[in-house]
Image 1 (cartoon, one colour):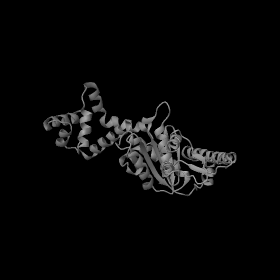
Image 2 (image 1 turned 90 degrees about the vertical axis):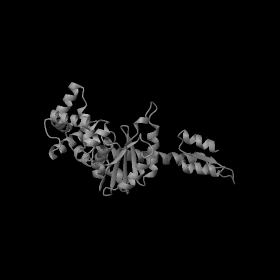
Image 3 (image 1 turned 45 degrees about the vertical axis):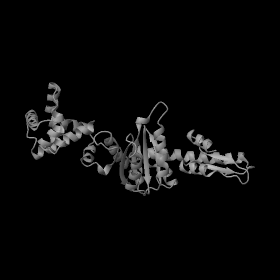
Length: 313
């Protein structure tokens, strides 16, 4: 029986209803397996009218499927078309997600597991989140999971996602800010997307909350990416062009210099270079750029330009 139940679960069955003679019971091993894997298991009498049972199950499943479809659509509408309240408020409130409750959005992906049959790992995570979140929704959209949680604060949501991301470096997640009404889900989603995108570019962590972004929070709020490109050109353009024309790596040297607290000695150790050679290279960087890289104003401009370059990746 344990092998049979395990095979059903692995094949994606929704559960098992089995007729048992009087006095017969499922074994403890079967019950433990079903509880651990959240596999529904029912026992019916030997003379149970299965036609009536299946008709009842079909009715319940159909209603649940329609409810889930309506809620999934409502979440997408709330995120993408927040001004059209008629497309989501009614469905949310009918299912207990009221307009003035607190909500938080998160975004998650694990595209490394995608193959020609789909993404089984994402489906597993979606099921895990469904049971882990006290009150929430999980919707797959564009190769990512959109996660909405209510009645849970940011730290609780972060704890759930960290338990998933912490043991799998191929899973990336971003957590948005907490909002006080359904109509602001879009804001939380945008912040979650910003954090999520930075896990895959500038910040070497696979889970981030928007509040943790520091200076990236300010830079990511710029609505015109071309401004960042223009700023990079103004601050570092001469160095970038020199490297391209001469096959040098002075931009990488400058990055290492700022990553090591603008210390010649620490930078030389980091790039396995003698300090005198590093001194020469840094003087060459200053000569190419044509300004004092150590003045407070220019240091700030260079750091912001380097942040923009990380985000551009």
